[in-house]
Length: 372
Image (cartoon, rainbow, N blue to C red):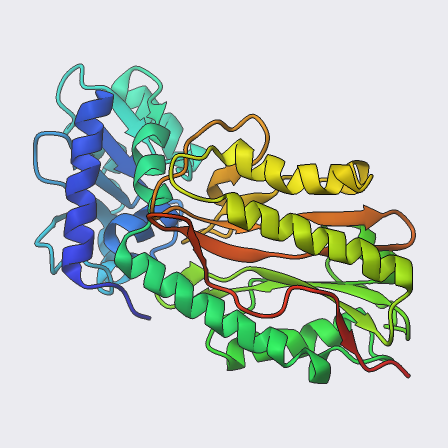
């Protein structure tokens, strides 16, 4: 398990305190999850015993942690940053240890991953329900720093190498489940710590955007949607979808996937600082609508990615947030014909000063694999 240098986390904690002051938040409470990984590089898990990073707007941050879980913080940046670890043992009240450190009347915000098991006692001790820390943590995590962008590039290259092996993995006569197992193994072989998800949507199953795998046998002529990803150290995700066909495609299928390819490229071309998330969604949607395919595009165009597979910003109609240099998200329009077939094309892009950089470089069009 690896993490970034301690100075990366020192900067993040400092920026968190600045954003807290701007948002009028006096104390930020972060339990294990992606937000704690972001702020401390900690992979600690949440149990019935409370572990909580307490970030104060006008004082040094500290961590409340069960004494028996101290080892869980050894791989984090807490020690390098000199954070005080306020450990506790069974019989003590850790929720009070947190709330007693909060200045009187200070507005408190909690990470959205805090379990109710801890939120309710903290709220009781405070005498009020804390707010969600979205205004602080969203602003921090949406805009990736240089270390994060490099990790996303590594993840993108790793998943590209898996797609490059699809001719050996996706074979007529194998079940979707067998193909998925081969892909899962390849995801790890190519540098991920695990396969977080594998979608093998063959034939009519490709028309279900959330299909995973089944015992259906891949057949000659099938259009197959392969959506795969996983984390690379220190915990940043890949996510890439390509569409394959087992043998020469039907002319209508090829024509419709060509439209989808243009829609995906139009959305990528629309990305630049200042453009809204909904405008990028519209760029893909408009191309499909012009071809009469608006009704078969069933989901948003994209989602943010980083320490979570899905995080802000969401590239969807109604989201008028302006894009900022450093934001990272997927561009993944799809078309789905119920009972017949489906297709999706997905890259992860990072907003640059004048456009965007795609971390995925595999061909986007319908890729022909061997039929039988």
